[in-house]
Length: 67
Image 1 (spheres, one colour):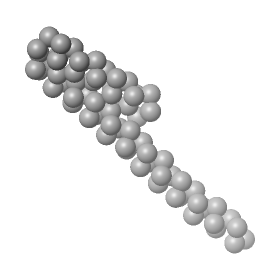
Image 2 (spheres, helix red, strand yellow):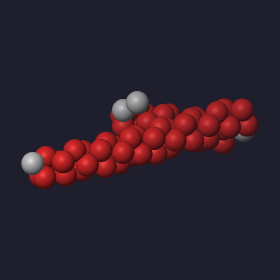
Image 3 (cartoon, one colour):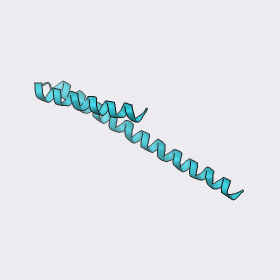
Image 4 (tube, one colour):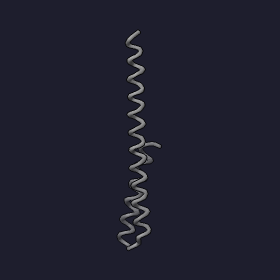
């Protein structure tokens, strides 16, 4: 999942939520909140993945320095 996809889900969700609030459509509002949560979860997953890759890289660089 890319950062663009998570950002899109958050923006899409916000639009749905606002549309639901404006029209009194509770289902649309709830879908919007769910889309936003999905986007935030994707973003957190991406950050965790990047962090893990950074840690892995730091270990592999450390091995090269010892040689």
